[in-house]
Length: 88
Image (cartoon, rainbow, N blue to C red; front, top):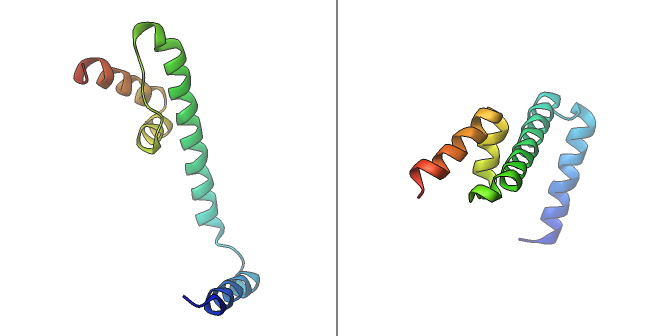
């Protein structure tokens, strides 16, 4: 793709945002989702730290962080049960 086209598209998006403003509802929902993903990753990290003596290791990735972040401690509990009961 031509660099001139990319630069013109970027300038066009900037001009549109200057005239109409950023979509605040989308930004709010996105920021809430990112915060929940980070909290989920922290929950899993602490579960791994305290569960290491029992052989618990839950990988921290987007799916497990989303489960733990959106479901909270119940999500972490579900991941622990899946680890011990389903995955031997």
